[in-house]
Picture 1 (cartoon, helix red, strand yellow):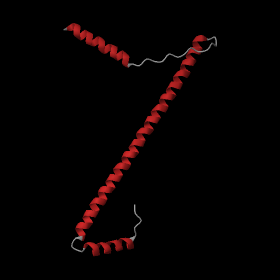
Picture 2 (picture 1 turned 90 degrees about the vertical axis):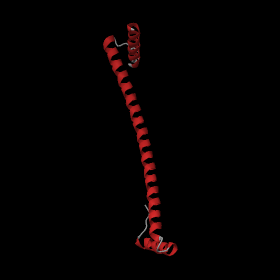
Picture 3 (picture 1 turned 180 degrees about the vertical axis):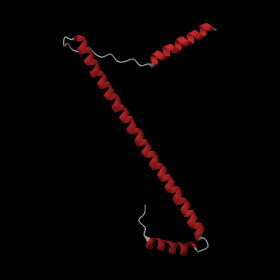
Length: 120
């Protein structure tokens, strides 16, 4: 982190001994070490949080790219199927978008609720 050599550390130790005094130096060193460690842990936490945020954005981008590729493959597949069906070389029909499955599940849940009401 810091480029401090032996002589610089020795000079800092001598100055601290002169300023703080020999009886309070161990307590001051513990306090300084505590705050230095606390700052270091905080900085590491921030680094990890930023790195995880970048990872989330990267994953979202990858999922979006995969969805785009899947849509392209589906359209190519639909074009191929329509060419086989036409056999006349006509232009392919517009592919119909697939309906999501959750609507079917909602309809089933509603019919289950209605059955439950009629059973009472």
